[in-house]
Length: 188
Image 1 (cartoon, rainbow, N blue to C red):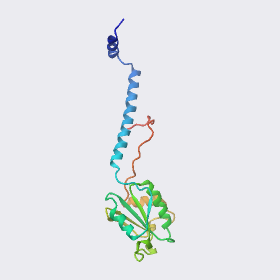
Image 2: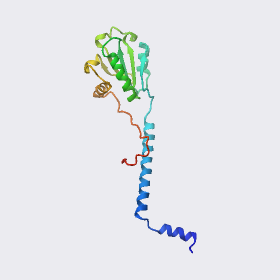
Image 3: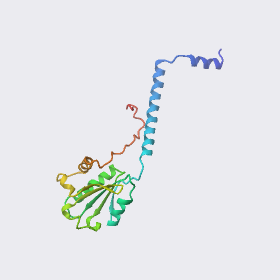
Image 4: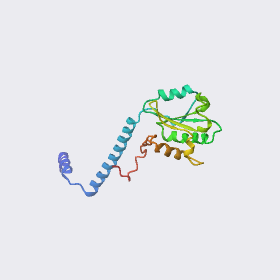
């Protein structure tokens, strides 16, 4: 009969079978994939700074308009839609911005009635709807009668493509996989 110490020594010196080796290797790969996902999620959370907006904000006055431009975080992109009730394309553009606001939560999408700006002479119905894009208080894009760039029926994707052509939208945010059981996928 062997002692417990000799049994441990025998198990340590014993060679692994191919099946045991593959099982351990599969387990290691699965653990590494989970660890990589966790690291990617943590890195994304650290790099995703600033507020999340996820909706279009209605501005009530010219003062609110100036405040959102001047006081927003310097890294926050602000897209302002100037509209007027009854002007063709304004309502449709508002709907498009609602969709984009959920897809680009780090961008602050706002809208304001041209009358509320206090500058109705500058924003007549001929130049509406207008899109103004700001970052750090600086005007990056000024698009008057923006719907002239779209077909009669336009959608959020058309507005997104238009803004991306001018390099005005950030890349869409990364969303980490919530499912840890996607073992079949290769992560590199």
